[in-house]
Length: 121
Image (cartoon, rainbow, N blue to C red):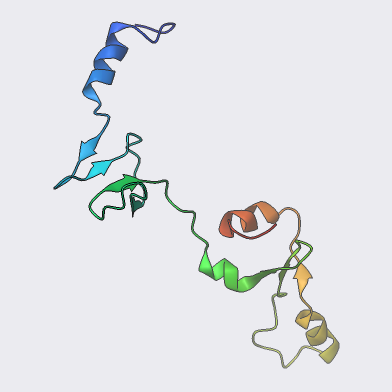
């Protein structure tokens, strides 16, 4: 077992087995990172048949993007629940109160940040 040194034999054998560049098809090169991500044409050569592996993009959850709005000051606003249907027995004051948007609480902010990675929070 080699725990303290990075230059031991088992590490060297493992490093020798991992290729630094992989090629797919005719003159295509993949970056040494080897991560799964989006591919984009190489900007340096201008060639259409050379690709580099880049990191994956964060994705916005569209259902959350439709439900939350970010104000200029960075607060996240949402509609209050309870006014979509069965409004007959509710008083007009209650329906008016449910029409006002409210700010997302501090306990919910980590969840909103995860759903909206590009929002200015």
